[in-house]
Image (cartoon, rainbow, N blue to C red; front, side, top):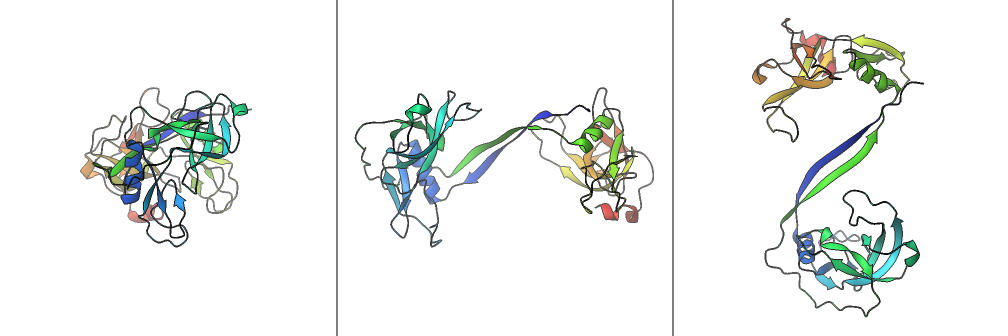
Length: 313
């Protein structure tokens, strides 16, 4: 049985967004240890607040403070907290309807174990020691057996309100390619590029997907393509990427390898960025020990005629 390939992958980027008046007040309120909801046209109080009525779609602006105490409406125990979650020790995810609210807020509950939890239990916000205007200003909820705390009736007006936030987005996962892509990766380690031919339309796809995207039939016939190819289209990159040691500007291009019916993308080197053009003939450049080409460079051949690659744009 062939080796099953797998590799840990991370997709991570900062998500920047501006805040409207409702979300600005809500997050600024958390910074000041105040929880704000918004009144709907039918008199309900929504927490977290939204900017538009979910029933009428009308704009909402009537902010109202709710209490930091509330009731668990449902829960689920988290045995193994992951990176970036609110607590490092096992905890419960809970929906909490804060006193004065008509909807529930999702957050973490610090509890000794699942046996201590039940729907209807009373809880209270545990505020973070340092608050910046984010949902994490609520460090978590904690069990509470005291009297309901009354809000002071904050209007939602704050000094120095937040106008925008930067929220990091991150996805950790393990990727395992299938048969077709495993063969493709294995061939690359031998400095070869292998695609698969569709038995119906006879097109050769690189990288192979195991099935023809046009006909929907399985592909199995391997075809070695390239190593040379043609630039079909390209873009000039002017923003330096984090953790990528390439000086800007540089060019990324779609390259139709000889014998392939699908263009793959790669970096173009060995030529000034402003001399890269459609139809440029290129070849791969491998570095020692690499499992894929570092970049493609011009071959010195005459440019390909547009009609030979126009279907691959």
